[in-house]
Image (tube, rainbow, N blue to C red; front, side, top):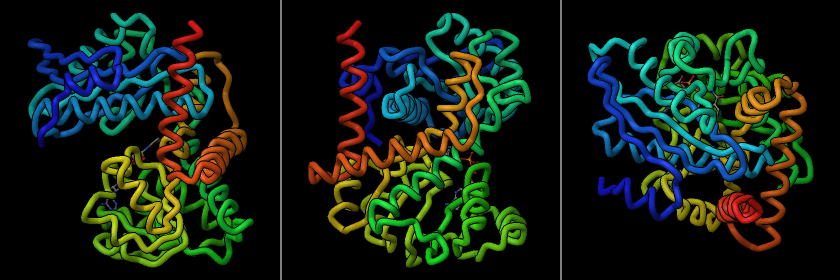
Length: 349
Ligand code: NAD
């Protein structure tokens, strides 16, 4: 892939891009701070097997920017950052996370590190040995983060269905949930409680069978998820699933889920819009954990799930109505509006 990290850093106004290598622990990765105009940056630490440092930098930059935009749309006094670590076999993990802790400590509160793929409680405990600038997913923290994301997603889907049809009308709906992990399983559970017919898939067959049996889900072939006719397709697995090849397969009326950067590029939002699919931008609907985590880190307050759901629904309603009033795809409005809010904060300072 032809990707120039420095060019993106410069063109899109990122505050910081740091590539790091620690000879002692073997840690290699990238730290990206998109913006602290609205407040300190929040974002998880992701450990993944990237093919090279360029791919890692690309992911860090996109995810950090998404975090800034989520904060701006949710009216949080916070911005976006991200650390990605190259998953290198045979390298001791605690020492790598301690090194990340040292980097975070040097930022002195400009960035709070949090959980993500490859960074759960044990890894964050290693980061915390070196710095206090960590959002805490443990029992003394803000409350379950994945539950907050799932609750936001379900309330966001409700807002989208109301926007289209005037009512969620849950018992008449068929919803496909892609991915039955921390968020997807909770989304499926909340939808089942509302009487929705849930079709689901996970590439981890053992997990899929277990969650489906527990919740009464109908399993579908992961390879055929997108082709399945449904009211809502909820991507709760990986990002980048909608691109030139896959986009034409979508058979849903609404596309809304937790996965970050669902669209390979914003143009794919335009094309979904032209095909009559209502795409709810992930920067609007997947901010539940961020709302919970950042609010706790900045003020010590624990936000109840119901409040998170209402807050995310309000963001989604605003994005959908404002985009419709302007006759543009929701993702275009959402990104521009988020950017406008960040720039405004910079100008006010
Ligand atoms: P997770 O790793 O617990 O679950 C992801 C699941 O998706 C796994 O079970 C995996 O087997 C499955 N999967 C992967 N590829 C798939 C495919 N092609 N088809 C079907 N299933 C597939 O992750 P999570 O914490 O549940 O997060 C899900 C998504 O939501 C991620 O993209 C994450 O970045 C995003 N997100 C999560 C949170 C949170 O609070 N956890 C917050 C915001 C955004």
